[in-house]
Length: 78
Image: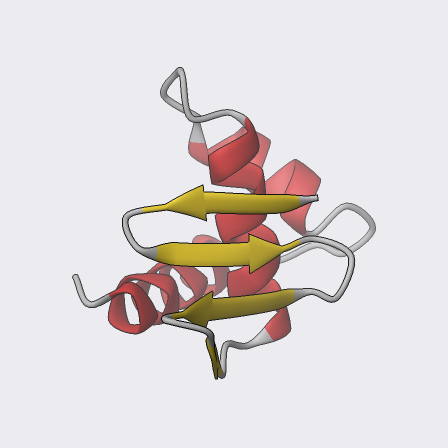
C-alpha cells in the first residue's frame, strides 16, 4: 500500500519514503515510527504505545523514541 501525505509517498511494501518520485533516506526505526503514526493519525498516540509497538521485543528508553522522532521530523522538513 502506498500512503500519500503532504507531498510525500510512503510505500509500505518497499519500505520507502519518496518525495517527487525521489527516494528519501530514512533510518529503519524512524520509518517504522512514521508508518505507525500515519496508521493512527486520527488520535494522539501516547509514548508508551509507540515504544511498545515500534520496538516490540526490545526494552528501550525514551531517548530512542526522541531520536526517531527527531530524524523523522528532519526528513519531513519540520
